[in-house]
Length: 407
Image (cartoon, rainbow, N blue to C red; front, side, top):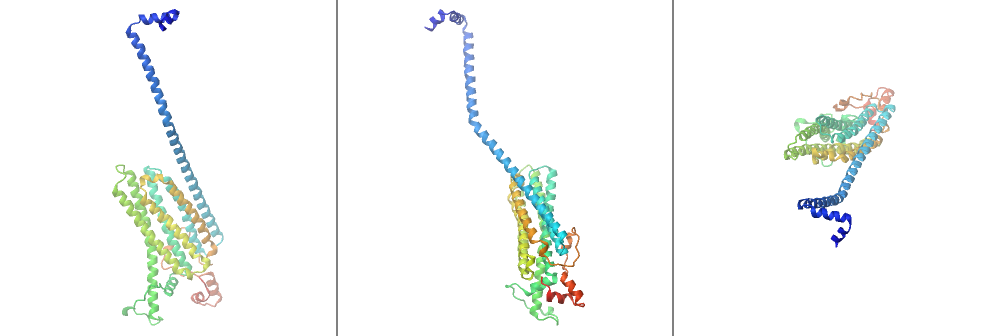
């Protein structure tokens, strides 16, 4: 039927004659071309199907990338905002203490602590930025940042300790207070014969109490100084070890490197816990003998929170997170900066100029941070002491202090 139709039309007749006269090789070539065309079309169809299948996965991956980028931007925005808040609050605090001088010595120490808080926020932000860089120059800078931060922590604790002793009236009065309020669990030991009290002592019991109080004071001071030396050393060693681990590309999961990192971090945490317990003991021992306007408990909470944040929380992070994976934890530093901003605002309230007694002591230099390490702490005369001595006809400062000055 089809053949008859093709022969009835001129074009069909020509096609038919061409096909009949064509050799078999040419016909096979034509059929192969058609087969290849069909195979090409089939392959294209399969590729389209595959593309349709993987298009949602690609879109999902792009969505994840956008979410990660949004999280990173949010982390940096919050971190920079918290850093700006800390520095601004610290600057306002320093401005207030410069314009309202009541107690030059205590206010200078407070301004140093405010500078330390502002510097800590900048160091947190620098640590957040340096964790994402692996070049040798940035790693050396990271060691310097961590060593500086640890030194600032030590200065804050020693300064807070010195400030409390100054507010009490010096080392000797602090020992007298400890002797009047010995721990309840303490049993007075017998006085040795070769160390008997002098004739002018009230009793052997009073002598033993003073001896124990002096030992307690020395132990508290020794822990504070020990932390001030050990904490920066451990942090610096840990930072150097982290740089060595990052540069060693042979094995990022070396058990020896992990053990060294964890041991250094645990030693740092142990030193922090000991310093925190000592600080709590100091606040409890002297809280009843310092005027409420000083807000010793409030100051104690701020210093305690600072130690737990800068030393404890940072130490846990160093122990748990490997150096090669820290670029994934930018949110940790953002959280630390937010907490530090809260502590800075609280610090500006409990360390206000109105919380200190008026003293006639001269203002020390702001950069002489080593003066807080002096021992014993000399008795500081309040402004009331100075005026009373001048108008009392040479009466002793000690008598006026015991009768009329409240610390």
